[in-house]
Length: 421
Image: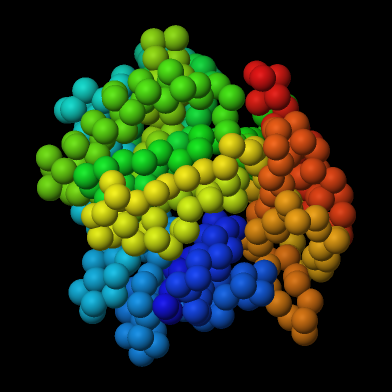
């Protein structure tokens, strides 16, 4: 089969490495891919939001199956466009992708169908929002309604910060039209858990749980980022909690989307907070998380393409989805200065990796045979081992063997999880 993966980051590299294991896959194309992905797929210089270009390439090259990985093309209707020309896809259509594309939609969905989440208010004009936050208890969470590169959520610890957040989003439009509406919600506390799930709209199969590390620096200090590392499984996510989540969150969400005429097929991401009152949804994503994918997919023992096709064809209930009982740790190497400002063009040289180590390239170009950094998050170094402590140690051992002079990384990925164990 000829398979096409839309996207060009570390998540897409992890998906491509997973697909390469399938005996059914003959060729893989990445649109646009990156310099590191070029080792595992044919990269094509077509942007992930260039829907017309993607469709033309798929048609001209007789693509058998497409995986649309990032949020932007999903929300823009890339799956709808590809399916209209006869290309089978992994990923939700535009109607279902709204679950991530609009936080107002997702919060109202949860309220309507009694899915546990934080209390919230929606505002469409800055004046009303500002009046509200001036008397709201803090901390408080301010969210831009639309997509904002993972940066549209601000946790305001003071009233002044909340006021500034509303002004930035609604008046100064730092996230563009994504800030036309905002959600202001109560601040929840407790361990955070990420759970990705395969679903065909009739059956939902959660993957291994994971723990993300969002802050740029050690001890959860610094600015929020797209994710500086992950571990799986998440020790806070016990079998009992998983059972509660299945009954009160996962199945109800799938059924709610069906009831709204927005059947979701693909990977549905649940960002959860384990509060004293039980698990609650912080956010939904309409696709694989990044860098959660870099620890979850290396633990998948089933054929990834077969599972993906089952979500498309509605046969997930009859398809084996098996994960290893091992643990995984991913440490992100980012450019110094990320997430604010950083320089590109620094050489990246990998060390001699053991069999249990994977390098997932997120931001790099290939020039004259050399891999050069291009972006904030540059590389994900993932280790798989029998225990989480071993996986963490192996990941950091592999990180230290990477020569990337402009890189930095957190030294405490997995520390919180190990403490919980």
